[in-house]
Length: 215
Image (tube, rainbow, N blue to C red; front, side, top):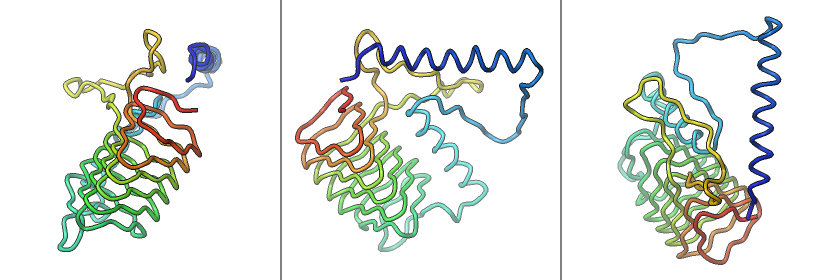
């Protein structure tokens, strides 16, 4: 697993960017503000990517509803805002949404449940697996009846100016619960649970994991 000094290194890098770079630019009148009336979202952590995806899908619902999937006869069950690339192969018994984005060439089997997740190109979700609050990397495979689940880190919905704070990778010596991330070409075996974990690329797992970074 990853140790605290690595997290400290990332924190130091962020401090150099925000304090040294931004402060210097502002001091020389070279830092500018772009004002927009459209939505925007900070992406300072993996968890914020799921939240940003939700904002984009909500935007599509208003401005480009034709880009979103809908319940059709012979198609998968759609709940809320879902994007499915035309090249994806989705079994009609799968249930997707809300807030799901399916990339190119993705294959989703019978009875699969996907919610609040991003499935990148070439991934395969085998029959009856469940993917919640996760990012599945390209060309990854999730086995039958497996469960891949993370913990969302959404901002306060009752605060109109709320933002997602930068997550610390560790808290009290333990990995902070967040969304689950599978890197590219990860293989998850059947009937296991991957919870609140980060799996680096090209890993072929053989058991369940919880709150871990799998190097």
